[in-house]
Length: 402
Length: 177
View (tube, one colour):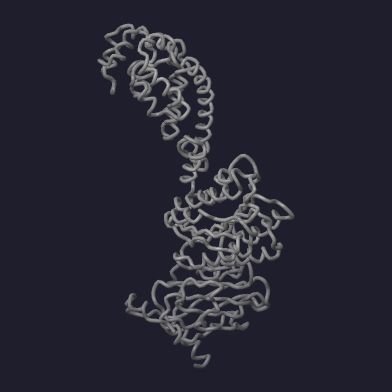
C-alpha cells in the first residue's frame, strides 16, 4: 500500500506493429498499461498514474499523474504508431512530470516499456540512472520486443545505476503464446514489491484464468504458502475427478437426473464454470423429461463416485472462496468416502418412506408436495438424498442422518 | 559580533534544537542507504565517529528538517573528516520539498564554507536575522573538501532558541525573506 505517483512510458514506435505478441506488440502493451493502472489505483486510492509516449514526433505526455482511471483509459485510444523511441528523453520528461506531482508525499516511480532498440549508449543511460537515484525515483523496465546489440545489457546497466534497495526492477518478456499482461502480473512490477497488489492481482488473475475465484484459492501464497499449496493440490485432484465425471455426465446427460429442483438450485449456487455446464444440462432435462426420472435415479445410483466428484468440485470451489471452508472441504472429502459405504445402510433407512418424507419436510427449500419430489420419493432408492443434505447443510446434517 | 561573543552566546541562551526536530518529516536526498541521516543527527549516533551520513550517487546531499515548532536558528555545527567532509553548505529556511534541480532557483538564506576548524566542531554562526521564524530547514551540501565522489558527514547539530507563545497559524503566514 505504498503511496506512489507513477509515470508509464509507452513505446509507440514502428517496431510495435509486429505481431509476435498477440494481437500486436502495441496492443499487448496497451493491455498491460491498463492492468498496471488498475493495480496501482486499487492498491492505494491516493496513488496517481500518468502516461506518456516516447516515439512519434517526440515525447508527449498524454495524461499527467491522476487517480482517475477513466482518463487514463481514454487517452490510450487513438494512439498512432510511428517513429523511433527516445528512451533518455522519455525518462527525463517522466521525471519532470513526477517532480510536479501534486502530493509531494508520494514516492516517485517510472515504468518503461522498452520494445524497440535502444539508441543511447551505456554511459548516457547510466548517467540518467544516477540522476534518478539521486532524486529517489524508482524505475521499472519491461524489456520486450526487439532484442539486439546489447539492448539487454544497456537496460541492465540502467537498472543497476538506478536501483536503490531493490525498489527498481527489470522484466524480460520473450515473445510467445502468453500475453504480455499475464507475464507481468506475477512480477514485482505488479505486486508492488511483494506487499499490496494481491487484491487486484487476484481479480486480474480471475479475469485472465476465467472463472477461478479469488487470488488462486483466495490465499496469497506470500502470506500462507502451506495453505495455498494444500488448496492447490486438492483443487488438482478435484479437477482430475471432475474431468472423469464430466465425461460420464456428457455420455448420459439425457438420462442422468438428480432428484428435485433443490439439488439443481444448490448446484447452480456454487457451480464453477466446469460444473455448471453439466448442471445446466441437468436442469433442462429435469424440466423436460419426468418419465426418465426413474432411469436417471437408477443411473445415479450406479455411479455414486461421479456425482460425488461433482459435489466435491462444488465444495472445493466454495472452499476456494473462503479459506475457512478448506477445512470443511477436507472433512467432506473424507466423509464422502465414508458415505459410499454407509449409503448401503442409509438406503435401507430410506426404504421407510415416512422417515424420508419427515426428513424432506425438515429441509429448507424443499416442498414435499412438489410432484417431482413425490416421484423421487416413490423410487425409494434415492441416492441423492444424502448428497442433497450434504450440499445444503454440510456438517450438522451429516451428523443428523448418521 | 566577535568570535568570543558568539561562542558565549551559544552557551547562554541557545539550546540544541534536537528536541524540536519533527522526525516524521525528516528527509535526505542522495543518501546511501547504509549510512543514513540518523547517523549524523540523532543523539548518540552523531557522537560515534564510525557512523557517518554518506552520499550515494554523487557528492551532493539535500537534507530537509522540519521542526515541531517555530524556532530561531543561531548556529550550526557540521563535523566531518578532513577530506571527505562537506565544504560548501547552503541553508534554506522554510522551503519545502526542494530538489537538486531547484537549489539554484532562489538564493539561500545563508551559505557557509566549512574550514577544518568547523569540521572539528567549531560552530558556524549564521545570519541570525534570516532565521527568525524557521519552521523547516533545508541543508544543501554542495561539495566536499577534496572533491571526492562521496561526502561523509559525521555530525550535524543545530543551535538556536524557540519562539515563545507562538500562534502557529499566524506564524505560517509571515514570509521569510
